[in-house]
Amino acid sequence: MKEPKKIDLGLTGYEELFMSSEERADKKKPKVEEIELSKLVPFHNHPFKVKNDEEMTQLMHSISETGVLVPALARPKEDGYELIAGHRRLAACKALGMETMPVIIRDLTDEEAVITMVDSNLQREHILPSEKAFAYKMKYEAIKRSPGRKGNGDQVGHQLKSIDSLAEDAPDSRNQIQRYIRLTNLIPAILQMVDDGKIALTPAVELSYLPPSEQESLLSLMESDEVTPSLSQAQRLRRMSEEGMMTEEGMLHLMSEVKGNQVEYVKVPMESLRSYFRPETSMKQMTETIVKAMEYYKQYLERQRSNRDAR
Figure (cartoon, rainbow, N blue to C red):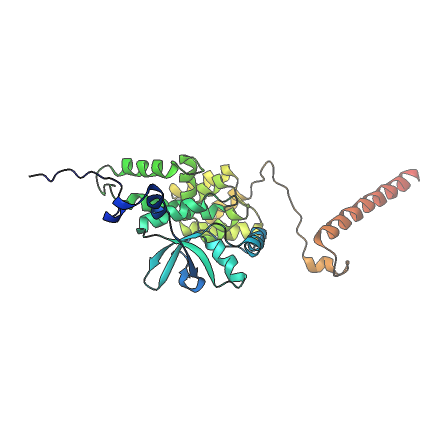
């Protein structure tokens, strides 16, 4: 015999029957507590970096003037609280010598915590590609583990649905999210080059299909010759790898091509130039002086040529 269907009246306890509407609304509001900073630990594998930059300086100034206006979010752990949102606020409070900060405490599952942590940080203005890459991957894995998701059946269809769910509230498109997740397959040094703007996102995605050993060889070549692959070169490197045709000679030949927008450089050891300049001379000043000297030398050669022709 089936149990009668329960009607949810939205009440959390018998005592709410005797509460006013205002009291019920107040009870359902999240409670903010002052938590000791020493009891707050960072989220496990938190993908977002807490940097001591201009934004941190501004945040510290704001907190010193008006306090923490937006409470952090944490969940209880055995020996304290795991921070879900508010890592930069925690760092700022520690730097200011504060002992506590306002925090909302909630009981969240691992999947709920990951999704909340990622969503709260993706709204920031400045996010590195590596931060987005690992954040999207963490949320993607959390969505796949969430209750109601089937663990078998059409795996491809299941993955597509997970990506669609991931893209619903994200600032990036579905395809762009997939590109970011691919970046997690890059070795750390090449991923850092993406963060530094030395390699664009799309070529980096192509390089992510190379096995780590080939990425290491490519990294050595890029560092020694001070070159980075264009999209076309990255695509050909990927094809060479997938066809089992990748060799160091082939990689060197491909990367030695002069790209249409590439600026060529003449390399001169610094010790060969320093003796001609004062110690405090900057690289920019040295470059400008050398170019001006070459202009004078060109004029000198032209006068020499004119004198010879006049004889």
